[in-house]
Length: 277
Image 1 (cartoon, rainbow, N blue to C red):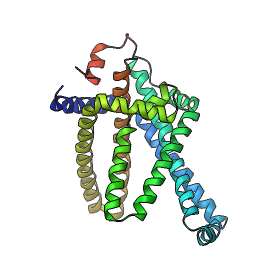
Image 2 (image 1 turned 120 degrees about the vertical axis):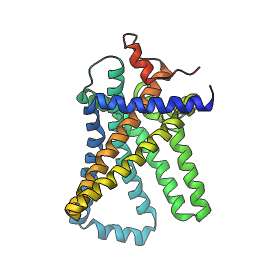
Image 3 (image 1 turned 60 degrees about the horizontal axis):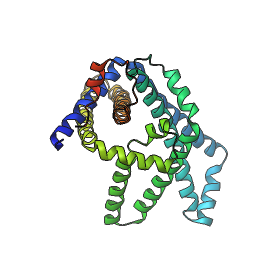
Image 4 (image 1 turned 90 degrees about the vertical axis):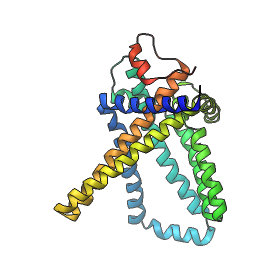
């Protein structure tokens, strides 16, 4: 299959992911819950830190141990973030699978599925947090060339692990086996993934234009109104794109594994999946 055909496939699947989200609007609740949970947990941590005088303890630790406490805090920050994001992404992936199987989409069922995979989620969050911490430390301590190299490494890591979440959800493997499996799927479907990334990028740019327009309209009413409307629009738009991307990952994964039940409406499958020829 030519590169142009693969890019076209990626565009089609990405747009179909947005269409699936449109038909199941309740799925947008999951990325919203992810954002709210992250804000509450990290906000609570910062609040407790300040109220308990933990900032003074941190300063003393920095003076005594150098960068080590900062690196430890950075790792914990990444760990909490990754755990929350992976938890709700896995729930969304499971809901997408249920829809493709012709079943009823249930947010509660998706969350229950993620709860049943807490061990796998934590293991992968720990690996991702470790890599994220190492890359951040290198980026902060290297020169301009080093930062570019680290940026490229981060991009390669993101591509390599693109399908890890559905793999750890359904294939009962550890994080390192999941990376190898994700690499295999990326190798098979890299063109579609590239096309989808381009597609979501265009949608993102259009969304930014719309957000700026909303801000301008609100600004004429009152500057504060403009800021509030723009922030709300940005949060909603981010949730939509996040959900659509996760649906895309689920769609490609199940296309590769071929584990969708035969009673699915074939027209629905064709609208979401483009088989590799």
